[in-house]
Image (cartoon, rainbow, N blue to C red; front, side):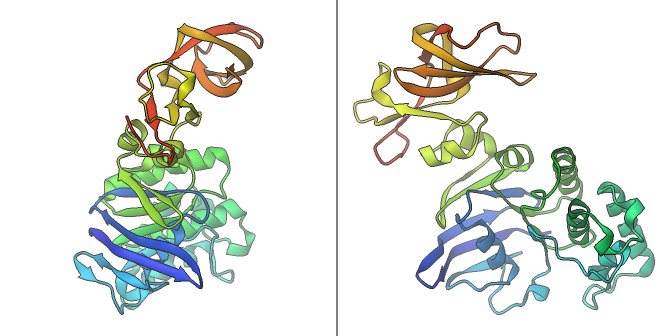
Length: 331
């Protein structure tokens, strides 16, 4: 494995700027998640690292070496795409074995068999090894795509929303398995998603992207507890952070335009009246939808609460975030 450094990457497609001077260091053995909506530049970043696309400016360094002029095969990276890409005429076993049979790797046959068996068990596809790829479901195909990357020993694993096509249970199981694999191998992962649960549960570091720019980089906890902007704050947290006019509550800084309130930053039982408009019982917690001075917000309360729509509760901010008119963090 190796440290990967992106140095001032810029990429344009016609008049559209996909990446704008992005610099990130992916530490050796880390699990870095790039987080942001469609069009933020996440997949373009992966393609720059893999060599599938060439930056207009900047460079990629893997293990301290510049990747300028090197093909994807020469970079020793393994990539899993959002849409599975398998050889339909081959069995699952042969699809998994394919990268190991590369002349560059020269993997012994017994080692190929061992790696296929291990990865197939982890991904719950051992019973499908002799099936043709065309006989698999979409979720099974994506698991084979993930497996084809895992059987290798690349400098870095690049993953572009690999779990998005899986059902909820399998997605949850594979989040745990991928994190365990990464930790046990000491592997370096650069992983793209718009799913904040994946970012919070899997990442050692998160890079928040917006319209091709790197907005914030840090641990999930750092970004959750200390966002530098409304945009960063809204990327992590369920329910999503409430952003309201700052003047609704007393104590806002003079130049504050908005106040940001995560559920734990809303103290109940004190302050001003708020109307309960909806109660969502989710098992381990209950979400309260509130109307406060004609503004909607969401918070959480005890799972066994007896509150109902139409009830009045008192709320007040507790250590909130404040933002200026441009959305930048003030305090």
